[in-house]
Length: 378
Image 1 (cartoon, rainbow, N blue to C red):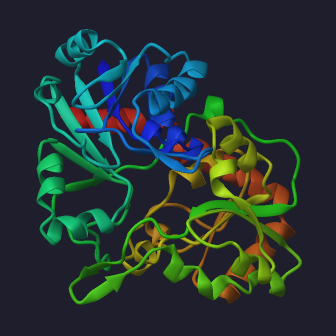
Image 2: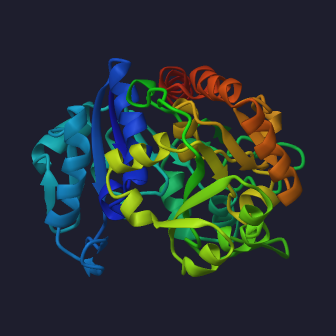
């Protein structure tokens, strides 16, 4: 099949976001499909220049980042970055030809800023929600722009594994929602060598405002992380956070090692290196993911698992969907987090093997993507 994937590589300028799209592009190509990357910014491009720390409104800056991310994977001539007034990458005429021949347009994360006529030309369209709960609350609260974009997609998927299940507070507006797991291209994420010493994660403190639904407020990571601040003082285990969006000093005062997230995640290579040099992931999700029992699992976590790095994750309800306890251990409070940490460290080689086995059994792009395509096209 010919497949177009719409993502946010250039607008983010970060390796983690690049990998989120690359897992699909590399995985689909390995399955024999012809893939093209699309990034459409609507009327104008505006991206944060991480080096200069200013907003950049020129097409060349984000387009260069897209090219740099895709070229090492042989995709340097299979992309377009565009606005109303111009584009980079594929000439527009060639991209139109791709749209005419395409079987599927996959829109990952957020609907395209502008829905253009040619996006109706592929045989099918699929939307992948990576912010379960918050996406559906926006729809329930009347976000017309979001509803219109998602409404143009015949199939809607979510990485919230429990959306629509009993006990899950995520509204089902915009559905029906079909669960899909974040894929990982195992060929690009081999098992890392060595045991390493630090549990790590790469986190954005607060990306958006809290969401209100049914009289309940659902927050971001700034609402969920504080109760774990004292964790480094209660264990000999060292923790390192790659942090964006807040002052790092409060974490440092509580014993956390802190690096600048935009530096760690500046390129796909540096992002992968940081993860593979970790002992494991310590992950506190957004408050809303946990409170809504969404069954959320991140595209970052699957990279740790594929690398043979165990994951210690605050519980979002994943026990209904995945085997827990070996390689992927969940917690609900600081005390159970410490118990989970001791459990992993007491049998670290076993948890390393189990982490990789989970990636191979559940998150392998060679398994996830065929199921996604079958559901999208039927």
